Amino acid sequence: MIHVDERSALLVTDLVKSLCGVELGVTKGYLIESRLAPLLEQFSIQDYEALCSRARNVAEHALRAEIIDRITTHETLFFRDKSCFDALQHKILPELFDAKTAAASRHLRIWSAACSTGQEPYSIAMIISELLRSTSTLWNIEIVATDVSDPAVRAASLGMYKNHELARCSIPTLIERYTEPEGDGRKVRHEIRSMCRFQTLDLQRDFSLLGSFDLILCRNVLIYFDQTLRTDILRRIAARLNPTGRFLVGATENLLDSQTIFRREDHCGASVYRLAGS
Image (cartoon, rainbow, N blue to C red):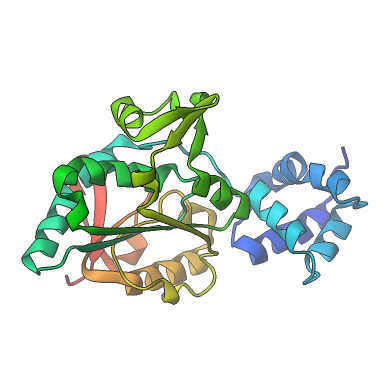
């Protein structure tokens, strides 16, 4: 394995931050070698300095996509952090459905802003199917799911998961109900996949064209950005949230430094955010 020296580590750190906003932090040497070393052989590149130089070439989209995919974390599972989904099922979604019904609207828009390989948006769709049951055909449910990684988005769109990927699910009855056996795994059923639309999106870039949402989830991703970028992303997310909307971040994250933007409520053991002043 080619080892990364201090100069090369700084070059790769700058490259990664420009590509996806991720701060590699104090373990950057280990991360670079463990995740990016295979790319040197795959793309016939001599060293990490040459990797950075080549990746900055506008024609090297495939290389940049590989770097982003290998650096970003895809650790996820269905119904990850059960308190979040308890809050969705017992508080957030019922209130949103009631508010929409009172306003004579049956259109609900949700954004899963770091969807990885799709477990989060599909989990939300399953919860919604449970709540609506016989009235589901009366509603227009749109779950926009985005991630910075092209391969992750492609995998999410397929909705196919190995059995070992489903083993740690905290609500196995819903997996059984809303997926079907296929090969050595299970595939998400069509009625669940039809609620979700997947696309590649870098949160550093403008996302205003996505429109406005009643519910936004951006869980376990903001921690990888520096404070300036994090605050910028939060302000732009707030601009995409409807006045009565809800916003969820990861269980170990908080928005204490964004109290002028969001206010916190606690439901079912989860922190739920609304726009300040709403």
